[in-house]
Length: 331
Image (cartoon, rainbow, N blue to C red; front, side, top):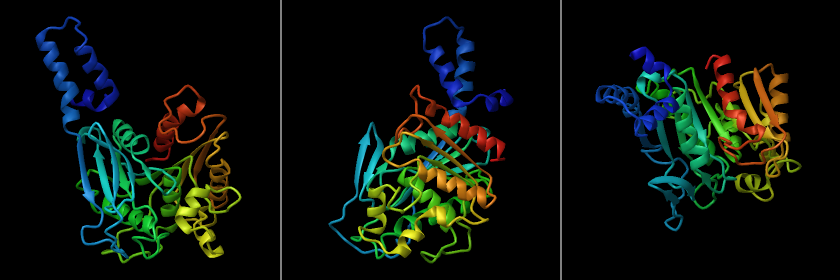
């Protein structure tokens, strides 16, 4: 029974549960056994929310007029704006399914909002189906109204989030050497920023825990601040209307890759009119030049912002390709 539980993923369990509710004829004993099989691992799933900075946010400017806005649907947060309390939403898989791998998720939104449902909640639940911990970061969006350096705020949150996961690895059944990041659109920029700036001292950490991800999953990501192929809104929100050449270079993450940059899996669509596919292509090319094992998938169609991509175009295959890459890469 235990071996069977480990081999059935959540999708199969839900299908069995639907079958039990379908009205088909089963003996009462059979129904009870199936319910125990289906529900016991699900009931073991753990979800929790943690304040990222319980002892105070670094470099905070107090502004009582800056109020966090959240959109909630069916009791679940689906969108955030003006984030003031950065938090971790922790989705842990059932203990008997846990692989030890964890992914820190950065939803997109052009550094102006967080698309917390299809690039957050849905992603964490999908990862749980494969025994992977999905941990979503509600990160602060760059703002001069609450930050001394708005370009550093999201990176501060990202570094501390990774460190918190590593500190809690044993408690959460996570291998501290199998913690990756996953970002969508502007969240992909933050994921690639953490992957290339993990050692940059943007605040005073309380210990020496590493903020380096072990891998990165970049889905239609913003990578560069080069005005010729960046996402203009993300660039403006992060580094301003007239940024210095130094700021442009600092946050053009394709220019910050070295031999210690973690391996990456990248997804983009050629017809993306929001974030040009060149973003993923230049990052991948620089990774290859640095000898970093990586994989890039460019799909003919798909556009932008499709999350798990449940449609019929070829980009809908990226979740399966991603899981295959994680397995092949030892994660």
